[in-house]
Length: 426
Image (cartoon, rainbow, N blue to C red; front, top):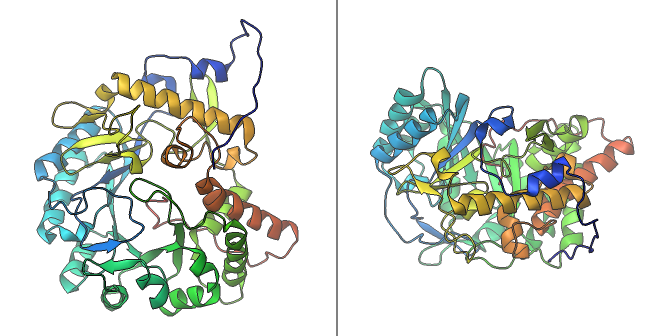
């Protein structure tokens, strides 16, 4: 739903304030940030191809079998190092389409390249988000060799999962996912799960939780079918009260004595109630830390070396104002060099305006830091806008439910705060 902000009148020449100064065009300079800019997540898309065909997928070109080269991996690491963006720790997230459609040997070689370029000053960890249908003993051996963090995409019980996550011939994938999970358990490889929830899930909240507990899942993230890219409408539209009841039931189940299930959104909410986000400064203006609104804190790189920053879902998507959101290519220039382009300046200005819109109008701003630019674009048609369905679903309702539970004094056993393993919170 598009937010309509009230018109506000200012004097002809208002006195400069940090917020107004932040909105004015200015050349990007990494030295303007405190603490210093560092890339936390390097999201590498080794292939756009996916071996299954989920009906809520937003990704274009998932029929393409193009693959990332090791030269591109090396260039990405070298650009990061040479730009001074590699801090003491870096998480490399292998994501989108299905990372396991690549050869196993690619990841052995890629891990060696990344360590060669970035170590010892930077400790590199690896995370893979997979549909789990291809996991076998050989893949498990790879995961163990490199201590990879594994996220499995599974939507719960078979009926919920197979309603949306199909093979390319239209059959359900649930049984194949369970085989992959069984292989992980057999090799004693820890993993977390990310489920896409819909109104059908809300009606089966207990069966949903029962499934994950039966599978030995202790960390669960609940995404929803967002309106993004090719998927232009979310099933949650018009069902937000049902989602609120679902969040309450998740909180009941995760808070129950003996439960080991940690729900990502509730764990984050508990953490934020106790300790709001740290602060970052840009030209004297302080904002809550949010990797999706800080330039180059999060970098997404396609198989061909083209890259963007801010929300990973922007890369390759068509836009009248921002083209395909590609800011550069590691084969021709560095990450910070791309910040001198007109496209980056327009995008950075729009992200700042959107962050200021949230700061001015949202009571949850200190716990979010300005939302997700991609969701603002896809839902509201404008990166410079404010509240989204994504905000209400992923941040506001879980936070308010946790806060209300604590205020009522019924959260003595609230979910443990544990976000390790959720390398990609989107």
